[in-house]
Image (cartoon, rainbow, N blue to C red; front, top):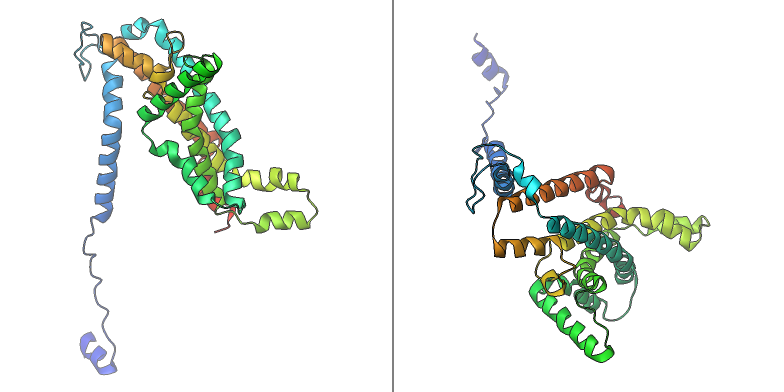
Length: 297
């Protein structure tokens, strides 16, 4: 008796061959689409970096890939751009710190308080993210003129005036990031610490703040990046002795394009990538997703 006949005789069912999935190339399609997205995002940066090493005639034409490699454009970067870069780094750093000092208490108040109109306050805090930066810059300019006519104190074109404008656009990012963490925070952790006898300040510093840190880091990083790359707001609030780096590049492109601008931009691209990688490695922004905001989920 054959195997098939014996199987039919005993009532056993022969195993069926597994069907192939309807689209077994789905993983390949995902890889392709992911790679295409990276090309779309990184291609402009690669072109700028590559063109900065081209030893052309110095005209307005951009040659990519570079025909003859050279570093001469890096030695021809104007000193004003380095000065403006220093101003931008200082403004962005202070904006991140100031946004944290203001945004953390604001986020705690929005999440923990029961005041009326809390959702209206939250919408007002998000307003700088929804208002066009040009409108914000014009509003600050008019406000500074009004303050000058009222008190005789000129704020526009000063470091303090520029800082106030950048704080306005940086604070919402810290509030949003910290609020997202606090909304998933497990309040039983604080209750357990209080039951064990810890004072409220110690609970805040040893329990609440460590859980908030991923949101604080992310918010400060966003505030730094938004401040560092801002043009529409800064162009209204800068002065000849106080110009941010993006505004300086904007003015340089208006006057005459030179390959030294590409070299300067390449240095900033490298600085930004190194900063982002350093922050992610040393601080760990991925902890925001892994911790679940301390909710234990």
